[in-house]
Image (cartoon, rainbow, N blue to C red; front, top):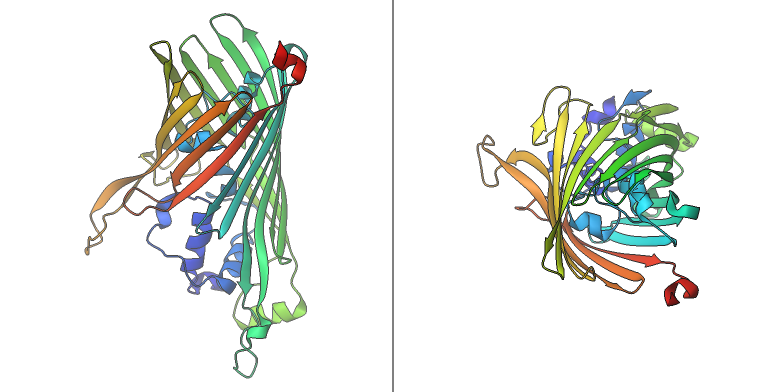
Length: 398
């Protein structure tokens, strides 16, 4: 495709970073967006029915400041309303009353906006839990410079129009307790997710996928596994260009895309966590996750031509289960060392994160200080989230 020969690397870098694709593209910079962003988004999905290594990456951002501050290591220990995102089996931890979670984050000085909301509803007997989660990631006010240059070669800034690129997902979750005793719990859960993506009026997509998860909770140890996109997740794209837009694309040697299908391959995330008691008031939780992909070699800590493994580590300390301090690291990669003029020496980089939280009765407020880049070239973001247990007055007084 001729588009790939045009100098749009910088715009591609912005989009990939905005979707939190691992930092394989760390050496490019954010500049010259406009038309470049439009064309990269549209044409990157115009090939017919194929797996894409970085498909629906907005679904890999995370949910809740707690999880983000712990390096996204949540599969084994999550037990609140955000479990619909991390591991649907963990929704069984929501008991007796509904649990609501809200989160907002902005990336790259407000260029990218990410919102998450969920509600978990325990059913009678606390053996089943229903969950509904919604996500939105968007880049607004993108300048469309397709008609910036008039046919006579003059520049007309009045021809510039703004559009938005937005990704939406709705997750419908159901969790079930398989076994519950004083020393162990076994829980399962499933997600059905509906995806909608739009790039102005130029391109739109609808998709559907399934996730499934399992949790085993012992006295101190916790184990979790979740399969995402287990049946593969697809996006069916359609495109809409006016005759004038088609003419401009033709004159710039760009193909005009047609309907296509983008497929997301399955992945498995394994998790193990342990609770430590430090006296009567202090507690510590440590968790390790392994994100296993099967779509070819990736720039991860463990990789092969078939399987790649991306580890995530997180810890959480608490005082009386009221005050929390958290930290985590993830996204280990090999990258060129800063200042190496030979472009040959590589070093290991990673993404650190930290955070804190506190609980006041049935309200919990969490904060995360996360890094989208790596420890040597940080792109820090502040994330806040709110969690509310809908305790009615009768339950509260009991």
